[in-house]
Amino acid sequence: MSVRILDIREVTQPIASSIRNAYIDFSKMTTSLVAVVTDVVRDGRRVVGYGFNSNGRYGQGGLIRERFALRILEADPTSLLNDAGDTLDPDRVWQTMMRNEKPGGHGERSVAVGTIDMAIWDAVAKIAGTPLFRLLAGRHGVEPDPRVFVYAAGGYYYPGKDLGALRQEMRSHVDRGYTVVKMKIGGAPIDEDRRRLEAVLEEIGDEAQLAVDANGRFDLETAIAYAKMLRQYPLFWYEEAGDPLDYALQAALAEYYPAPMATGENLFSHQDARNLLRYGGMRADRDWLQFDCALSYGLCEYLRTLEVIRAAGWSPRRCIPHGGHQMSLNIAAGLGLGGNESYPDLFQPYGGFPDSVRVEDGYVQMPDLPGIGFEGKSDLIRAMRDVAE
Image (cartoon, rainbow, N blue to C red; front, top):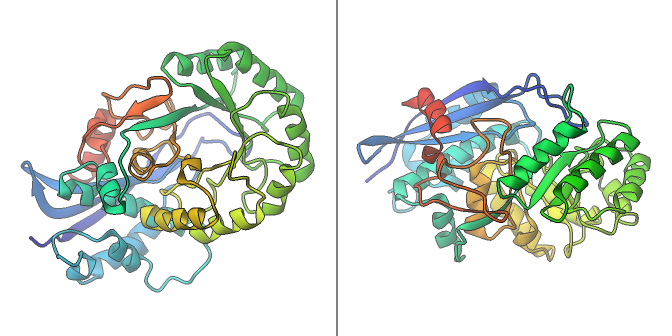
């Protein structure tokens, strides 16, 4: 059986809301939804792989349609297949997308490539008739672990949100089974953020831990001031204090904040990941890495990032990707990562899990759905099939 890609379709869709973090608001936020249509039929339905980019970076329709999808569609179809010729080879598709691209400059093109790459892997796993996490585990000699740690991200600023509303939001996450919740800081004066923090800690008590995220807002002086305030509390982590490429700031901060820190969601290549570990002062025994495959050239590049992590003496268990999507959830289960972010209420229908999945004691159990598992989330698969089926 030979496999062909018949079409690659993209639509840019809004995921707008009134929320904001310390750096941006989400009033105009979009995402690209991509469908890779193949000529394979399974159970009476054409196999279509789906992908989308994570929140916080806008849809990349122009780059996808005019550059990266076009290269795939113009390629010799046999050049995209594995050696056996019976399925797509994601690495060969990736190399085709990146043909004639200069190194460096990992800004928006990494998002476009990562979105298509997600759809390719979804198609490959569907063609194989297996969940992506089991496919990955088999390819890499890893024992798959269908039980994955997840934390609930939220705590954004939005108009009229007082301490009572913040407490209620975090309580809802704990009541749904999460044992770690996350809130934003840096979008208000430090004294106000302290009151917000203390309100959440009082609400969740010993039922859960709290992580905080500054979204790269602070200069070094402010990052240190927050570190001195935050180190008084038993936090899960202090996330992305300064600009993601300011490795010197991150390294200096470790002198003032002995507890765990997290960063990496805005680094989009294995080279940037390597520089973070070389120069950012990150500590392999306590800190967390948040690289997001959907924003950083996809799983093919994420595998290279994992090689960099191991070479630097880090365990993949220190990786908890940003983005809250099922692609990273499959990678976590299939390649032994430390867990995954989750958006229980935001960025729907793209956030969350298949309808049958529940959070229990901070973990979810991966369902045995072919591909990434989008078909198990009814509102999401409806939006996807509108694009291609």
